[in-house]
Structure formats: C-alpha cells, structure tokens
Amino acid sequence: MNSVSEPLLHLAARVDAIQPFYVMEMMKEAELLERAGRDIIHMSIGQPDFTAPEPVLEAAANALRRGDMHYTSALGIRPLREAIAGHYAHAYGLDVDPARIVVTAGASAALLLACAALVDRDDEVLMPDPCYPCNRHFVTAAEGKPVLVPSGPAERFQLTADDVERLWTARTRGVLLASPSNPTGTSITPDELKRIVEVVRARGGFTVVDEIYQGLSYDAPPVSAVSFGDDVITVNSFSKYFNMTGWRLGWLVVPPSLVDAFEKLAQNLFICASALAQHAALACFKPETLAIYEMRRLEFKRRRDFLVPALESLGFTVPVMPDGAFYVYADCRNVPHPAARDSAALTSAMLHDAGVVMVPGIDFGTAAPHDYVRVSYATAYSRLEEAVERLRGVFKR
Image 1 (spheres, rainbow, N blue to C red):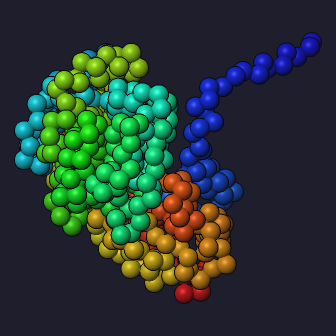
Image 2 (image 1 turned 180 degrees about the horizontal axis):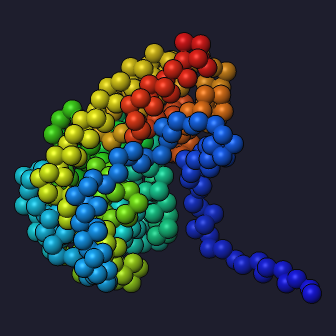
Image 3 (image 1 turned 90 degrees about the horizontal axis):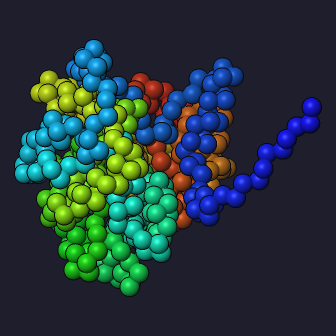
C-alpha cells in the first residue's frame, strides 16, 4: 500500500514571529533526566507547590454533585464577579462594580482578550525588558508590535513614566506592564505607576497592568492599578496567590464602556471559563480560606528571605530585592563556574551537574539576557536548602 505524504501546509507569519518558551524546553530536559532516575529540584516554572486548599476542593465537589457544569455567561457567573468585587473592597479598599469584571480562562485568556480588543495591526505597545515572554507574544498574535524597553536595576527592571514620554510615537497604542513582575519579582512603586497612567492617558492610549502576583507582596501593602482610574485595565488570576494553576481561571477589570466589546470577543473566542473552576473559586474568598492563603504568603516570604542571601553566598548578585511574586532575577556573571558568562550554558550545567533547574534570561527579552537567571522559590523550603548545598558543591563555595 502506497503511503500518502503529509501535505506541506503554509503557516501564518505570526508563528515565526513567536519564539519558543524556553522554560518549557528546560522542563522537558529535566523530565528526561527524571525518567532516567535523577532527583531534580525544580526552581524554574512559576507554579506554587501549594495546591487549592480544602474549602476550594469541597466547593468543586459540591458543584459536581449539583451538576453545575453548564456553559455560563461569557462574563462569568454573577456570584463570582460579586465575590471578586468584594475582594477589591477587602484587600485594597476599592469600590469596583461587579459589572466591570470579566471572568476568563486564566490570565492568558484575559491578556489575549485585551490585545484582541485594543491592538490593531502594526500598533506599538511599550513594555519593559525583561518581561514575561507570553505578554509580548499576545501583542504579536494580535498583529501588533511589542516595543521592549531595556529596564535595568536602576529602574527596578520596570518601565518608567519617563520611558513612556520619551518613546511614545504616532504608532504607539499603549503600555503593557506587570506588577509584581515575572521574571524579576519587582513591583512598580505606586507613585511611578500613577505617573505612567497619567502620561498614557494624556496621549489617548491604554494601560494594561498584569497583577496576577499582586496578592504575593511582602514588603508593603499592595496597590492595585484599578485605583488610578476606571480607564485602566487590570488582569488577575486564581493561579498564583490562590494556588489554582491548572484550573485555568482569571479575570479582568475593564472600563465600563468596554464591557460589551470584551463580552462579544469572549463569547466568540472562549465561550466561557470553566464552570467547575468558577464555582470552586467562590470558596477562595471565605475567611477561613483567606487565612490559609495568608499563611502561605508568609511562607513564600520566608523562602525569599532565605534564598536571596543564599544565592549571593554562591556568587550570584541580586541587584534588586524582589518584593513580590516568587522569583529572584539574579546576575550570574560572578558565579565561580566556567559557564557563568552565559546564563543558558550555566543553567544547563546546573541542571546536569547538580540536578537543579533554573531559567536563563533568554526567555525574557533582549536586554542582557545572558547575564541573568530567573530563580523560582515556589518549591518547598527544604528543597531550596538542598538546592543551595548541591550548587555549593558544584561551585566549590
């Protein structure tokens, strides 16, 4: 029997414009070593080692028993939108109309919706370099142009209002920020964020702020960009602070005038977020559940306070203390290892020689990517201690 060769299909140009997600490539390499019997300590992927707490699991089980598994409104079930609005009142002292909240299939879907609604072909969107790679790829998928602005330690690895004023052109449509940030764990100071919003507003642009790590703030009370005006669009998620990564549930707070547009796009692109995840997430806002999350937040802070000086004792430099999320962005150039001048080579060596997975800076932009590694402390304290000792042996420190 003659075999039929697979036809060569033409791929859209946007596929070539989107780079691989190197952290996932590192994960695949680590999984190969694990299948061969190696014990690997994961300090790479941004997934909390904590899972959804018992009240959330019980709420999911009850929803299953009731059969609450049908399509929901594209905007999300009303009780969840009201619960999220209540969370803004409780956590930030903000009065947010539940009608402005759009429940999405994770923060990724939220950012895709925002880009689909706001970005036209060849529109430029300013964002810091380094930044979470998918954020710039969402702009590319909408046929816009992400403009990466080198943002170093002096700027806390964040975009500044001066950057926005200096780089805004006739093609600039808006800014896409993250506070706290992946990969750096740094936040934009409230005063600077307010200035950015004002600069963008004066130019008729949009401000989208990714706040998915907002609940994981350690050194000062968190401030949501929602407080700087109804025209600011914020993105949040149940994945990080609420420990529901695989449930794929997030939300947006959008201007009242844009709710209908976001709803229309959501209806056509996603139908709705998971009904099961929505009903389960209602339990996230119970006092007993929030108490669990607060204990976990403090545990993340304990890990940060151990890991930053431990990394520095190994030869890494941490130029900006991370104040949120669960990442450290560490300069690796002074690490006593032959591969230290290239973060990709160093992370590969650490994986193979110590069984410790970190992520090279090449995932996060083009500004000094070979100088930095991203270290996640979303793993057990005892495993962090073990990782440091393994690396101490490799680096002879």
